[in-house]
Image 1 (cartoon, helix red, strand yellow):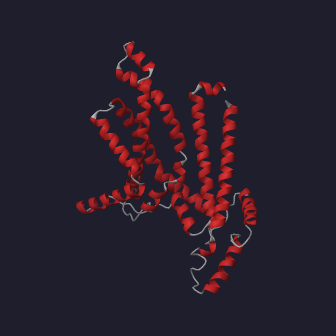
Image 2 (cartoon, one colour):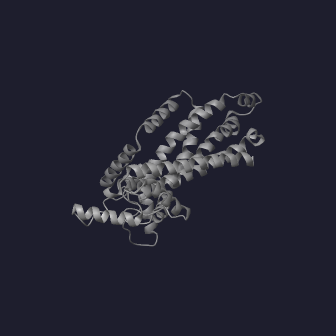
Image 3 (cartoon, rainbow, N blue to C red):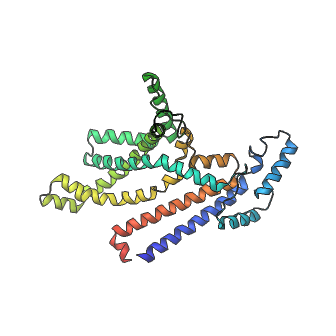
Length: 330
């Protein structure tokens, strides 16, 4: 078992290195920090702007006129000391990542957990109602949500929240930023954050329920017709007990693997949700880095995402090893 996990981990580690290296060369080849708004923010003279940009980029070692391999080796040496470089504006990428990771964590965690739990429950329930009206309606709803872009769902929730605020005359829903103005007792900041978290969490939960429910329903349909479930029923076991004790437990094994792989997304963030709701997390930082021609920022986010998914893949492998005796034997 130990050799199996070590072999799989090394395979994932190689893929992380390849993904990070490829991203650096792609970003360094196609992103031009000279076009960043930071280099010409205070100088509209094209000649002086260019001179200032070259001086700044040279000091930050992000000058695109330099050989890409030279920049790569310099960048690699800094990364070896856990320094992911500087942005075109002169900021530290390490500080940006450190702050935004926990923003994404606060945003995604509740929605991810609720979406998984509710999706598994509703998916198992829909499988027991196969081809009935309730199953068909739930299937229609799930497919509609899955086929709708995240941006559309987020905008629709914002429109409905705005109408609800106008109808009630109260600011019940807040959906711009992580927090806003608050006053009063010590609990006001906490309630304010919950108020801003409500709509993005609802968006992520709806998406999670739709995807996990479809996955769980298909798995349950396979196990409900399995021989061991029919044998349990033939021995006199009640249908509900046979479904939950035998069919559902077996169907949860692949779902658990999918859940383990999805855990790193808590730290990587949800790009569209963060941008539309004004949360300054990892997803938004990735988009901002591309817009600002920030090579180091793009590579850092990609590398961090790859490492997160490496951890998730290893957790999934551990889950498989624990549940599948054939893997432990090999």
